[in-house]
Each structure stands twice: as C-alpha cells, then as structure tokens.
Length: 480
Image 1 (cartoon, rainbow, N blue to C red):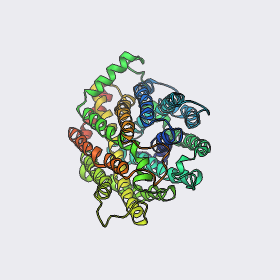
Image 2: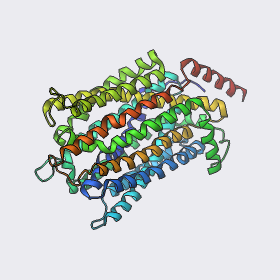
Image 3: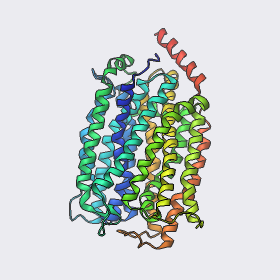
Image 4: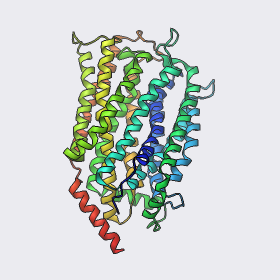
C-alpha cells in the first residue's frame, strides 16, 4: 500500500460525479414528497410510507453493490463499470418517477411512487457505493483523503446549491395561480428531463476524468477476491465490519442522526413556504448564498483536520450545525419582538447567513466523515486480510437508509397529525398548524441529534494510529 498523491484534475473529476447524487437528493428531498402530497393529493402518511419502502429496498441493495464491486475484476477496474452503467437507468427512472400516468387513483399513485422510487434508488446505489469505494482506492494518504472527499462533498453541495435555484428560476416561477410555485404540475415533466441530463453528464465526467487511474487501481486488486459473491459471505463480511470498534461508533452515530434528519427533511419544504413565508423567487437565494460557505469549507477542512484531527472536527462541526439551524426557528417560535417577520427581506438575509454557516460546517462534517470511513477500510484490511471498501461504504449507506426510512414514515405521520392541508396556498394555513410545523422541524427533533455525538466519541483512529496501520499493511504485503 503506497501513499501515491492524486493530481488535482483527477480529484476534481472524482468530485464532479457527486453532482448526480446532489440532483437526485434535491429531487427527493425538496420536490418528491411535496409533489405527491400537495400536487397529486396523496396523504402525507401514505407518501412517507411509500418512500420508506423504497429506502428499505435500497438499504439492502447497498451491501450487494458494495460486495459485488469489491469482487469484480475487469480491464476497466472494479468500480468504473458499475459507476458508468448506472447513468442511463438513473435518468430514465427519475423521469418516470415524476410523471405517473394520468387518472391513477391515490393507491395507484402510491404504487407508482414505490416502484420508481425503488428503481431510482437502486440505480443510484450502483453509482454511489462504487464511487465512495473508489475514493478510498484513489487516495491512500491520510490527509489527502480528507481533501479528496472534501472535493466530493463540495461538488455535491455546490451542485445542489445551484440546481435548486436554477430549477425554481427555469421551471417554477411564482404566479397568482401557483403559490407555492411547486404546485404547478405541468412543470415537472421538463424539469425531470433537465435533471436526468445533468446526472448522466456528471457521471460520464467522473468516469472519463479518473480513467487514467484504472491501471493503478487494477494493481491493487490483481489477486482474485478471497471469496466469490454470495449472500452468506456478504452477511459474514458485514458482521466482520461491525466487529471494528471505530466502525461501530460511526455506524450507530449516523443511524441516530439520520433518523432525525429524515424527519426534518420531510418538513423542510413546507417550512420554506409556510413557516418562513418565502416564495421560490426568495428561496433561490438561500442555496446560492451557501456557495460562500462551500468555498470557506475548502479552507476549513484541511486546517481543522490537521489541527484537531478528524474525530474532533466531526463532533465540533455537527454541534455547531445543530445550533445554527435551530436558533432562527426558536427565535421565531418565541415571537421575539426584534426577529424579522415571515417573508421579509431581513429574514431572507438572516436565512442566507445561516445557510452560509451551515454549508461551511456541513461540507466539513461530511467530508471528514467519509475520510474516516476510508481510514476504517485500512484498519479492516489489517484485521481480515482483504480490502473491502465496498462493504464498508455499503454498510454506512445501509445505516443511513434503514433509519431514514423510519424517519420518512414519522415525518409523513407528523404532517397528518398536525392536519397540514393538501394543496395549501401560502397564507391560508392556520397559524397554530404553522407553529406546530416549526416546533417539530426545529427543537422537538433536533434535541435528539445531540445524542449521536456520544457514539462518535468511540472512534479510535487518529493520525498516529493510521500511520501504524499503513506500516503494518506494507509489511504484510512484503511478506506476501
């Protein structure tokens, strides 16, 4: 195992691929539940359950995709074929997800949502898991891994920050008939075509830009895998991964945090329009403002991880993000006299500033987290004698998706519990319902995310430990 440094173009190409997932995530997080609940008039509980079913299916395909790519051998390497061949199915199924046939019943729309949400997520899995595993192979240096995954997180966050306002600007302008503008059903067809094209382009750039690394990556996996793929072997590999103390710390910490984030994710589109009183023309500036924070994160990540190491950077960033997101909500709920009114320009400026801070810390958090998982793959190789980046990152994704599915169900149930109306126009929702929405999206759920920090305390790999692991792997390879 060598600490060969990657070129800047290779790191940029690798990160550029993450735009595809950013587009898909914005589609699911901002548009999908709103579309089925508010436009197609499917109950929030039914929509949440449908999305949760898709996540459960997705969670079980993650380890399969990871293990298959770990064991796959070809002239194009282990990961690149999976990444490239996911592009077309991803774009097609995403388009169909937002274009169900006319005249379906509520149950028919739910079944359509389940089917194509499963297919979109399955296609994304066969890009996402090999892509994350590819990062661990591309960068073997302890600090460059943080840089590589910061490029990945940066492009993902930047792509999402640009894609959302661009969607609002090109496809969802506010009108007297459609306010919120996302109620415009006809706009979803051209928007879905636009989204699919971006996803294909990002994946192709990633594959072409990292193709020169394939000979080196093939050399890492020149020996045949210790076992052929089987479900029994897969369960054994996941169990062995859970035997690693650092992996368990991150795994269970992410499960708790993701559950709460999924609940809040269901509520966030409703928050923008009804709690904050913003139109799409105003909301488009919030993700654009976050680009400033994304640029700042490129300075913060290497400085923070070198100064405080990765675990402390992760915990500190997470705590500050929670505080930054919740403070404006709590002030608004408390009817503080000086706090800006909903829909006002001062409130918009405040939300933009909050987005800048959240973006800077959020990119730092996720880049550090992925870098920590990459370090775990090295320690795990030392423990089991086989590189299993795919299984490690698949188990990570499983934790996220399994708990997110429960969060989606709870988020949908909560919308129905507070009796949030379907097809609601701005200014026509009862004030008590809006207050309950803000309370649920803010302090009621975020208090639980603090508990995830206690799990992260169990992470054990620092720079010194990783150097020892690297030396031990070098000696082991020499012995072979």
